[in-house]
Image 1 (cartoon, rainbow, N blue to C red):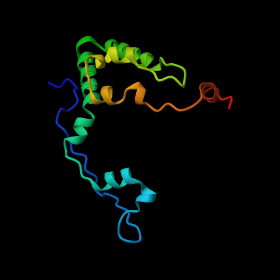
Image 2 (image 1 turned 180 degrees about the vertical axis):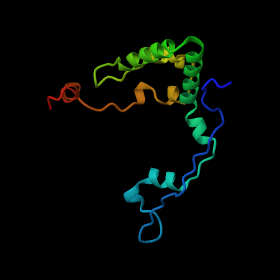
Image 3 (image 1 turned 90 degrees about the horizontal axis):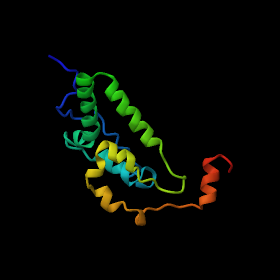
Amino acid sequence: MSFALPSVKPKPEIPDRFGVHEGIFGTQDLMTNGLARAKCDVDTSHPLAASVQNYKAHQDRMNMSILRNTQGLHAPLRIAMELKSAKKIGRLPFLPSSNIMHDAMTGRDLEVGPEDIFNTLEFMEVVGQPHAVVERSLGLL
């Protein structure tokens, strides 16, 4: 009996070609491609890396599928509508938003991860004069 649940097994995503573009000396031109581009072209990832990276989205899809199968279509639609409206709530363009409502709805407020420790507001780089940023977002500049 199938409940239309997504597969739990990780599927490796290894490209057929790595696309290493060599320069005139037989190595990558880092000034043109950049360091991040060179690293992602050369490194091969573990087959579970994609599964770990997409874990949260996969878990949300599975929870919505189970909810749809048990309670009907209205429950996941209502939750998706509430999450979408929570994402639209924002601040002025020059103020960072904490997204506390979205975090509380998804259960993210109960977790502590590296982004909570290393991405604090005092270390964030928010550049720009408030008046100029608002005028640019309104299309006046």
